[in-house]
Length: 199
Image 1: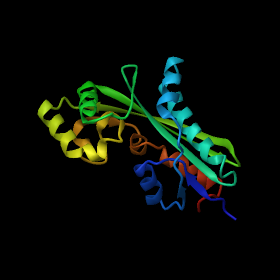
Image 2: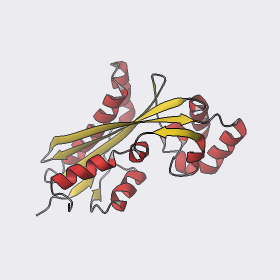
Image 3: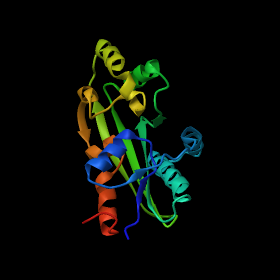
């Protein structure tokens, strides 16, 4: 019998991407203190890709402990700009401040996925995308945040590339799914190899 697949993430876009790919899975959000873990790793001068990887593993480990007979997918994303790690905006004002900081420059998104099987980590991947923002006006920035706050409040950097946020960018280098927060093709390939999904 095929083992169940569990996504250990509350992210709506990750859930949607897996569902759109035809994967049958359950969602169980892992409750971890992301900010505390992130702050500890930053204090240790951990690389952004390692921070994303560690957060993904923490999520998967938490849910895998309760469901040892499942494939559990943990995933996380870290935004790096000029050596600084940004977090999800606290409020609309913070979203505007993040977008002003990113405007006219390039930043990186590091998206990680870790899969647990039988309660142990068996696979991981971290992908990077580089995004160059246009030098948009303050007026457009303010209007963008006002129009989209309900959607972007959960998004580091204060944007959704899959929605109006695409207008903020001049160029994107890297995998589209990496930008959205999960190295999806790598995850699907692994699940296919393990016969967890039909190949």
